[in-house]
Image (cartoon, rainbow, N blue to C red; front, side, top):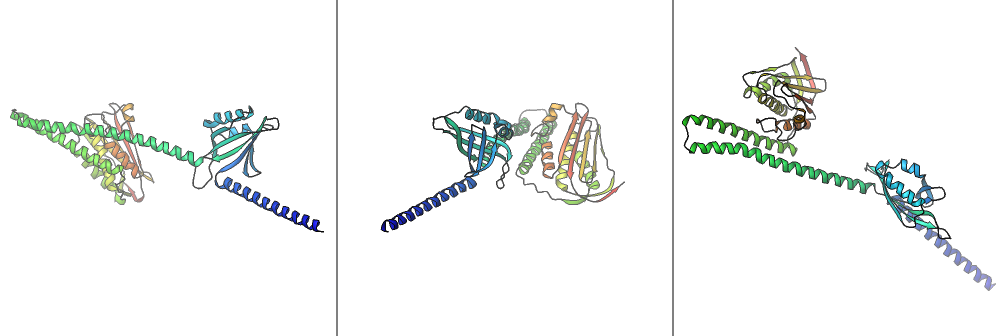
Length: 388
């Protein structure tokens, strides 16, 4: 009886040890599952018999089984070559660890991250009793967030280089543009102190005034552009009777710049048009475009008109001036871009940025010696519309 009791106790102890071992194994499996679910990691196997790759969502729970053909169909073009090399290495029974990083055509579904699903696979060979490779076992890790961060950093680095290049070019151009009129002012001022004909003084004064005005215009434009770049221009919309405003602003804009041989026409088909716009900033756009047109038109006509389309206010400015070539039009919105000796080359860049900040756009079409057309489109609401 004593031996039976001892055997029974020993059996109970073995059962307890086995239960503890099972509990520890279950706990270990749960820990692995937690890592798999929360760490973006999956167990992966590759069978050399069926030539299929299997991804597990949990231990011993297959989530997805793919053939190499199907896997390649889900891989982006830039990663297909790397993925194919990985499959070829496994099919060739390579005895070393195989690591590949691929970008898929699937989208990441984790949280707020919206980017292609990127995976890193590390596969080690498994061996049969004869020491031959009979398959591969490894881990698949989600690298989407890391890759998205790397791409964003690369993009920001490129943007920083572009900004630095633009800034340096801007400073060089600004230095040149400021020195040119300033040297003229200083040079003609010095001529007054030298021996000269009294009849030349009117020329000196004229050159000093013109270059001082150009210098002042340049500084004002640069300061305004800096405020635009810093998003410091406040857009204040209010309802105005646009026909009255447009006619008055156009006449003021061309008054000091219009060549005697050029006529100005302001077209309007509206008796009353109440639109909600930023009067000050639209006025700046009108001033810049018409001043530019007047400076480059020696003869013919400058015509300004507008139309409300139901959602947008479209202003059109047309001149019979010098016009521009196709190559010049590609750079017309760049800073300090000018087709002649007049102006600062900042006017159209200011207009484009102002239109953009008001939710609109600006387009230019021109032909050499035939003139230029500028369209400015600004989205706005209309409370009253009466045509003539």
